[in-house]
Image 1 (cartoon, rainbow, N blue to C red):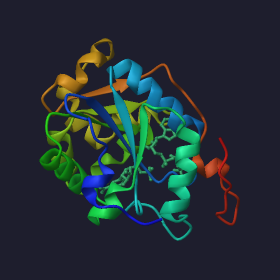
Image 2 (cartoon, rainbow, N blue to C red):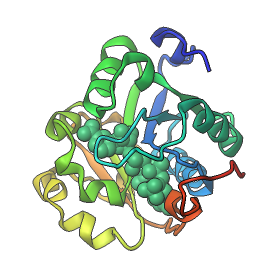
Image 3 (cartoon, helix red, strand yellow):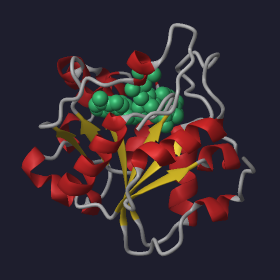
Length: 209
Ligand SMILES: Nc1ncnc2c1ncn2[C@@H]1O[C@H](COP(=O)(O)OP(=O)(O)OP(=O)(O)O)[C@@H](O)[C@H]1O
Ligand SMILES: O=C(O)c1ccc[n+]([C@@H]2O[C@H](COP(=O)([O-])O)[C@@H](O)[C@H]2O)c1
């Protein structure tokens, strides 16, 4: 796949939109990625969710990560919804750090309200991300419950440090309008599906809707 310029990887007509950013390895993409995206659209009143395919999660062993073009192709197949866009922006701008991506988007895309979306497993280790406090200060965060991580995630250092900025779940629809830091923990969607469960022991996988 030929990588496009950063400007081209940002879909047009975004002004005024509320856009969820679901960063991920997508190795492979699966039905839970789609389900949590549409769940976030509904609960957070978003217009779109962008799947940001990482060139390689800095905290994961990326030795068996499939190529970006293969993951992007599979992601398009799995997403299959006009409200979900697939983006390789991080490879184009040359970063694997979320803080860089967020700063880039906030500088380059005006008039859009971004929300960073992640599963509870990522909240549990959010304190290990580069400049995580800066990320939390830049965009509201939506955390989706993910068994068996709920308790661990809410007891983790980042959740504790940001506790006073947590919105009650019933106010989730207001999250995108909040000044960061602000976050919400969304329950009601507990899906056991994972990329790990879909990979063969040698790291191979086939795209499957
Ligand atoms: N079943 C799920 N419930 C809630 N969040 C999920 C679920 N599956 C993935 N996510 C979230 O989607 C984002 C992208 O996930 P990722 O591509 O790493 O898939 P994964 O299934 O978590 O992969 P792996 O098993 O390799 O860790 C992450 O924020 C992750 O927490
Ligand atoms: O910026 C970081 O330090 C950082 C550390 C770990 C994970 N992330 C991001 O978290 C997102 C979820 O990653 P993953 O592998 O769990 O799908 C993805 O966008 C990663 O780039 C980012």
